Length: 340
Image 1 (cartoon, one colour):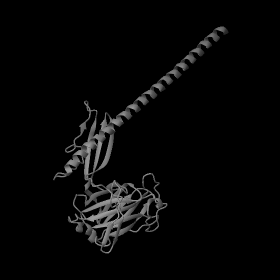
Image 2 (cartoon, helix red, strand yellow):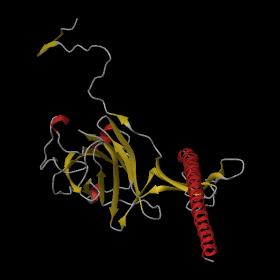
Image 3 (spheres, one colour):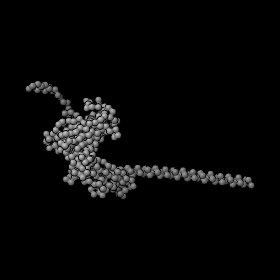
Image 4 (cartoon, one colour):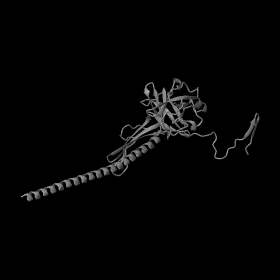
């Protein structure tokens, strides 16, 4: 009788072990299948995300072409703040319409001007302030915010404590370049004298601590002003504030920005008046495009210039690819060149 019970118990144990092993193997297979499916889905999502991103870029490029062409027409750049596609229509980029850009938004009036500059190349653009309704207004204050040079640690350590201008960048220890802003009020009148009379140069210096906003009373005198800039430890940027007196306020300016010592990859120009913040037209436009690939969406927003005025800053008064002789003798009533 006991032998029969032992045989029955052995059979039950074998059955339980078999069930457990089957459960373990099933769980391993299910887990492996889930991991495989997850990896496959992640790979597909990355592929669709890339397609959607490139589709959004296509929408930006298509809108930028229209914007730059319309800017030269009497009607100007059209605003599109909904996805109805009236001026900038949505477009499919493949035959089954699964990839394309579904919405393009364009705003030709920007809340601030974003640009860059370096010691060799200046950035030139119009500064036409407007209110929220697009009406021309005169700013009472302008602010210029800029970032540290490429490859430099954004810190105010090493910046000057007073109006000091080292002779070259080898003795300049601040990570932020000194900003030079040539500000011309109005259209200039078309003559060299009018341009000179309506232009002022601002040398915006990053100070180690503190700052002093420099009010522009008029554009006649002085023609060059040193403006102390203040360090923002949160954003790691420098900001120079320029209040404008009544005689310096206008609804139209032109700005030329360059840097001394170091470059600045990002410069932001803002303005305010008695009513608060203002916007700017005829300089840049914001283009916002949404790309779609099946059920994946990507959104790209860029700021494009409407006019290109950047210019190269010469390193000397005379540039030549050949040798230049500067040997001469002179005194009152006499001049003789000693060059061969």
